[in-house]
Length: 306
Image 1 (cartoon, one colour):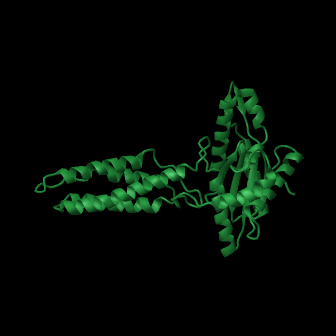
Image 2 (tube, one colour; image 1 turned 30 degrees about the vertical axis):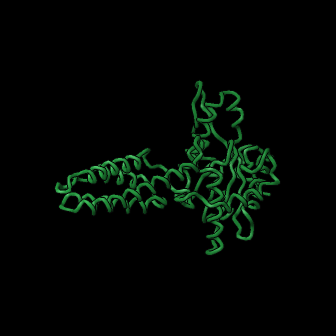
Image 3 (cartoon, one colour; image 1 turned 60 degrees about the vertical axis):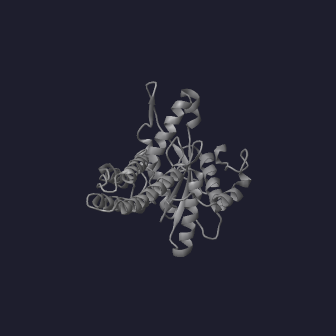
């Protein structure tokens, strides 16, 4: 359970967790990181391909005979941008920029097909190139916040999301809960089958968890075998119902098969409601205490109540 320590905490000093949570939550997020940990599943290298193709075309326009008609903008530029836009889920922070870039590419394609002065093509092409470069940087910044094993956002993304939800609650009211999940039998999996199987087990659990959440919920890996859920518009009673449903659904099927054995998942959880009058450290501390109460009450408990 020691993975609950923040970056600033050495060892398992949980008494420092509240202050660490508040310090981390105050950090500014990288450019382009949406509050809701938006979709990060863009095709690998697609924006890099767009940038390189566009740069090559601009070089050709600059080097061409001024009296000759410049080459057409490669059709792959539009195709790749359309592919990236389709892959970005609704609400992604990259979606508006990708849509604008696709419109720019379409306009530039039409301009390059008629007698447009090279100077105009270069100006418009450089504008598109700058936008694509910005999108590429934003995407890289988002990926840096992903846990490499599970593909889930990590603890800093979690704190940014919770801070955003607290701000929303102060403005609008409503409900939001945070749930701390701890796998009940992860250590025996590691001890008996090795860390590679343990990694597969964690990744499979993360995938099963994400697949069963509502579209506006979010899952985060906090470290080790611990995960956190952010459940907007859910009261504590509703959040407990969500946790119970997840525990039942995920436990029905094996996560991993290894050495002829099916490995299932069970977890305990602690739920706490976000409160605009409390700090993130206090809220996470409450959920952590309830998680420990659930663990003491016995494995596979859906939620612990202080």
